[in-house]
Image 1 (tube, rainbow, N blue to C red):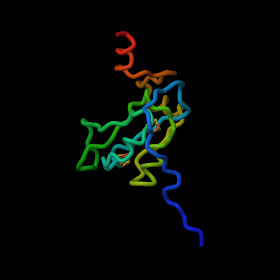
Image 2 (tube, helix red, strand yellow; image 1 turned 180 degrees about the vertical axis):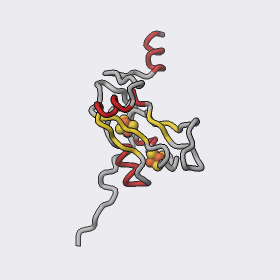
Image 3 (cartoon, rainbow, N blue to C red; image 1 turned 90 degrees about the horizontal axis):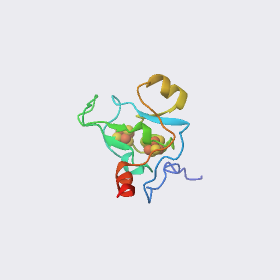
Length: 122
Ligand code: SF4
Ligand code: SF4
């Protein structure tokens, strides 16, 4: 019988941290009340836009993670990692649905991290 590889769709950790170069088709949203705060998803994000939310504490004894939405490139790696390796607390929302649910969040076409902007100015 062929052995099933449960981790097949889990990608490797990114070598380099990138930036968003176009508006994504979908955005990752964390179900904060469902997140265990294990932080397993954080190092897999290729643009490093997942962080621990110090202000929320859903049902978990530790703080959940939160996505910096405007930096997300919609790759869905975090959702796959969460489902395959730990739990099921990240869902990908199509951009139109996201904008309807979070009208206060502006999603731009590109994003460059502040420290890089500072380096360019210097
Ligand atoms: S892997 Fe899932 S449960 Fe763990 S911190 Fe990330 S979103 Fe939360
Ligand atoms: S979808 Fe990709 S870019 Fe967005 S938070 Fe998840 S891993 Fe990061």
